[in-house]
Length: 479
Length: 84
Image 1 (cartoon, rainbow over the protein chains, first blue to last red):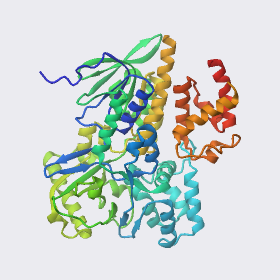
Image 2: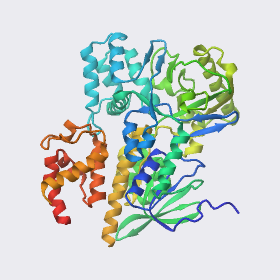
Image 3: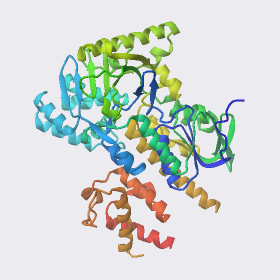
Image 4: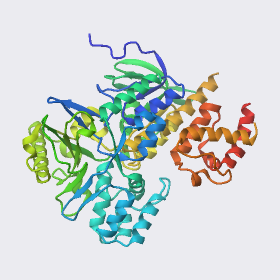
């Protein structure tokens, strides 16, 4: 008989958290600290969602999404996790752009971007100042229909080099395009511009282990290898509400569910259409899934070293920036994340992770043979590109591997293998969920702004606040 | 509970949320956001702490009432009284 991954759990919890991405982990931690009993279920054998890593022969550890997050993480990690974990957050100062329009090195903060826009791109200082100040003042509840492309063109008309400089990194950070609402760009860009790009010293594995330790200390029951199949509901007094979940074939009762699964998975699969009004189902179905990613992992042989060519290098051979080019199967745009030994102090190891944006449909329909061929091409093109910055690097590599939207779908179960959640409208569906089905809450990557490491952590807290309020009302009514 | 007691409880919460801030010089009639490095997440944390520590619920529509220490005291003191 198969091992029972749910062995020893209770029959009832205040909250069941589905999925252990940063939103699920952070929400679980906050709810446990509020005194609620919390069961967190992860289908994979590892916690973290896309904030994850894997190990390979030769002593390689590859980080999937540790490329860089905004300074706001220091504060959020300190508040919602611990000072100790926050103390390991360090700045990445070597951000580079290499493309046919320009080559620049930057610390990726407002001061340095201001300098570059004025000196390198020849923009009037007053325009730069106005751009940053206006962006900073944007709120997500503003009723502004302008797109990011229109907004950037308004400040920098005819300057598609400036457009690329401002947009390319954000497209890699959250999969957004020039057609997405300007507000999504404004919020995310302002977060980065506050003080630059940061990483977690010690690697994703150490971060997630410390978070798991914290969760256990706060009383969260953590179970891996457990897939939630269904959210259970019951109708009483004309109102449907959540009563539990079915996971690994077993029924577990609960008062509330925090779903860290994709919003479409949550509404259409885990809960099911029968629990919602036709209008809400139509809204959920209409939510556009964001693009996905490919990655190439290059492991440097033990004992070999690399020169410091930057931490995060945005490269492209495309003559100008285009959101379509960026997600195309044959995109010539890729970001190199270089992990030097100081990522994991004492390790003396180097790895390179190449990230490309991608479209799920391109990869989903391939035959197995074509799939293998395309993955080999991705690796070869990434190597050829890297050779231009680090001549001879090919001879230092002893592990090469590619991941695609299919890989992300397999490990995260995200709808259409997305690596960036949903477009803007997904946020409304996510936030409206508990009013449709009391007890069902969602905190996953949605709406572009509630995405990325900082966005999902903060969204986990926002939703934990709503669940805490819901549970207290329930407990008071019962008492 | 007096309004001064109420302000002190709010300052205690802010001290935990923003440990790097100097709270000895807060002007009670000035918006907290204008004198401290507080963002919207910090205000949400204040709401969560009021519920956790004091059993006080602040509906989302009333968040603007937490703008300054004075407005906090005006809004929260009656809530503490009905608790007590």
